[in-house]
Amino acid sequence: MNLRRLRLNSNIRGLVREHYVTKNDLIMPVFIKEGLDGKNEIPSMPGIYQFGENSFLDEVAECIDLGIKAVILFGIPKLKDSCGSDALDEEGLIARSVRKIKETFGDKIAVITDLCFCEFTDHGHCGIINPHLKTVDNDATLEISKKQAVIHAKAGADMIAPSGMMDGIVEALREGLDSEGFKHIPIMSYSTKFASAFYGPFRDAAESAPVESDYLPKDRKTYQMDVANAREALLESLIDQEEGADILMVKPALAFMDVIKTIKENTLKPLCVYNVSGEYSMVKAAAMNGWMNYEALMMEILTSFKRAGADMIISYHSKDAAKLIQN
Image (cartoon, rainbow, N blue to C red):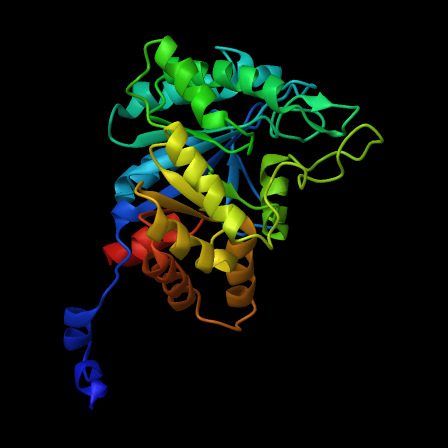
């Protein structure tokens, strides 16, 4: 058997190629920092920036020009407190930012809002703390999450993406959105999110590292998933599908290809993967040191997500990939 016949030139390879990354697959994260003038490059994420409220629209405009279909917003407010009150304010940072995008660009790009509290709390955790159990109080956090979701929807968000890994979050948000007249707003659940070491650079970008205290959990392992558990990973997504999630997610992506494939084969919802900050920064560091070809490595990794079963990809590579696809 001669399998190499179909590899002899690029045109034939293109005819038989099984998976492609397109601009339609890509979602670009955008970090918006209150009080920042211009933009700040994140040292641990070369080429990625925090944007001030006077500059983030330029980033969104560039995404539109490149043909990227969606951005996902992360906010860094001046005020951080125990319950993340800026996230519960209709005039808060994310609400203002969504309105500005919609007023400026209309429906030229979809706006997804990350729904969580870690960027908004002074302790860096994803909700209200129960100091006796030293973890996030699940049910209390569900209540404020519903309020946050409605605020995002009223501001004009096209999709809500809860990332806190609270039990029952999809059902709670669906109930909260539907009761306020937002039955049409889809929920992209971070349905299978691991307590991963790959998130380090994101904590720099979002200024959301957990604070050390006798009354706080030292990390997020009491609510995010154990990286060793594959069957539980599927169960998490099956539960969110049952609760009404419109899109499921695996986060991180690169070290969890087996999980991506398993969830794709056992669920019926579209599947997103989050190509997280540590994955991005490793590739950037290797390229900057001359160890690997950045464009080839980036596209190989993104293609591998599609091959494993991803329907869409949140990635800090999104603009670079869109430029390469365009050219």
